[in-house]
Image (cartoon, rainbow, N blue to C red; front, side):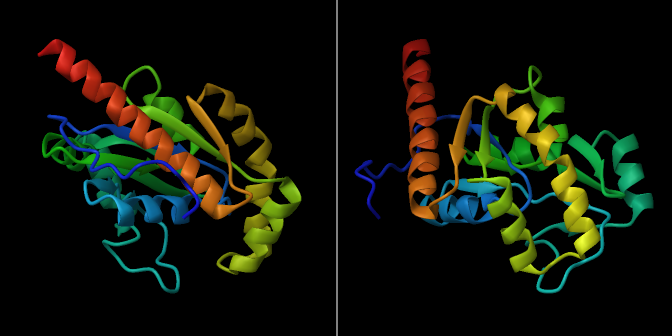
Length: 207
């Protein structure tokens, strides 16, 4: 890795931090978060609950928690979600209890959610909001076609809402462009390290 950022255990905080990561589909946000989780043992990624069908290669409990719409609606009624949205006809939500438990154990939690979900949390949740941008819309379309996980009509729908998603980027604390995976990851990890050290300093001052 080309980064000269020193290694950090990202520890010494009583409660873990929350990082919200949003980006248009095909931007590489999932790969970036996987690299972060692999490098730092006390960083975990939240696993969303969804009503959409299982895709080829996906594993329940690893990629998503797959539930029926009836079960999802009951979870909404029981107040189990930190946030939830309906996208492309399916529900997606984040477990409030799981997030709270992880934070109390000192883990830093990364939520990979869309801009609708992120907007629900802005001003209500103490978190760092990070937006990942594609190099260009043409590159984004190429990536969506290349990954071959969705029909062309779904890809066109995704591209149609990218403009609105990009407009929401101005609401985020940090922006990074993923035109080179290693460079983008260096930026992401430096953001996380900086935020942890900043909050560590605040914690020491309070004590």
